[in-house]
Image (cartoon, rainbow, N blue to C red; front, side):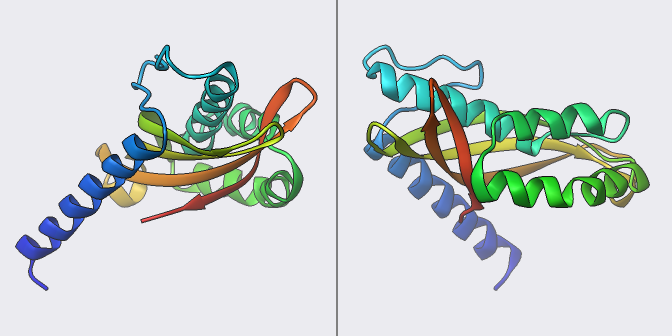
Length: 164
């Protein structure tokens, strides 16, 4: 497959993802503005998913403790355990490669939602800079599926999966 056809496929996938996000729920701007027509539960789960996606995609080799703490503050269950178990490795790799990543959520859609569980699809872009990029900032495009559970008054992320 040539570069031109590869770009076409990626473009088509992006169009399909955006259409899916619109079809299943809500689009949220990168400034966190949520559609006023959503229920309170949809707004709550959308805000929690947005915050966790931003935390998860953020890297700062100069302050990885803050970054990891932010991810774990919004995590629970297996996801929290797995992230905590890999925390030191993630921190060491960020320092070794002098990595930074600043994320922005460009869209998200609230899918399945009941009183205690929800699924949110997130489209996010991240500006990445590290030793493998030659110190130059490069934009990366991520599509995530977050599963959230309500614990008390908070929505916490129990699973994060990269999707295509």
